[in-house]
Length: 106
Image 1: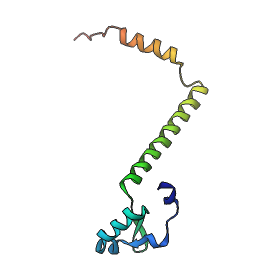
Image 2: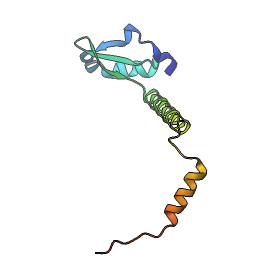
Image 3: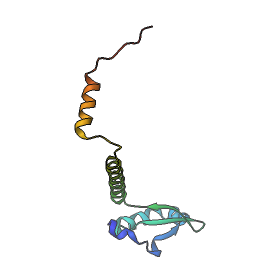
């Protein structure tokens, strides 16, 4: 259904007040068609109503995109010498975890 959501049909754009008056029937239509409803206030987009499954798929896609950006940034940093190899990371973590904590004297 997400593929169908790329284009908003003008029939699926309505004033928020219309949605408020006809919420039950419009939610039934949403469930039947799977098409998002764009709600407006004074002619400007105020909200988008989606089926829960579509909303969760959008969240998953956004999370994947953010993860991809993070991985790309990490690889760019490593290639530019702003990182350490896994072996060096392991060595540093072992040293940190195996060092005895020092107490400050009063």
